[in-house]
Image 1 (cartoon, helix red, strand yellow):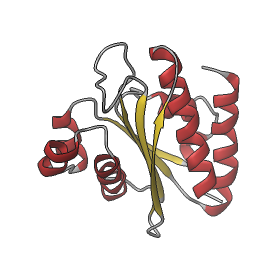
Image 2: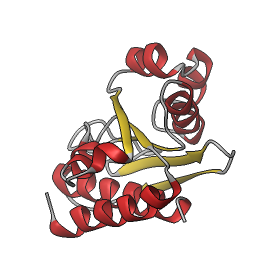
Image 3: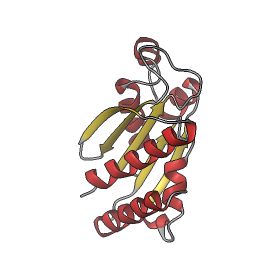
Image 4: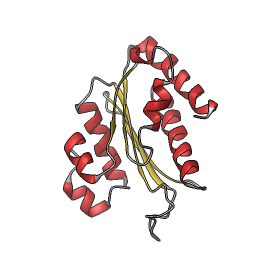
Length: 161
């Protein structure tokens, strides 16, 4: 794991701990990479509750309550789905803040509308603050995943302040 990503996770812990906040994640294309970065930090059990790796649509529905309608209408890589994923994380955890990621890391799976590198990330707090953003990251599968993990952590850090 890249040192800048670990440093972001460390900073997140420093932001969450004084507030007694817990974070939780829902990840698809990153396969638990955000949770891995967070749990690389000693003491993260004090501010990290759990992770959901929901790689399939079925997992998103069963574990997080993502609606069939959203998956059919917008696809798994969409604003609607990542916002439903963060809501599901907050409903099924002790977290005060959540992040969700769904994307196309490649090298296959892209379309003209959603090329390889397209990643939607959402952040949401128990207080109701929420946002979602679409990125189109350059590079190979590893590069796309690393950039998504970095952005997810940066957003968590931003929303935890």
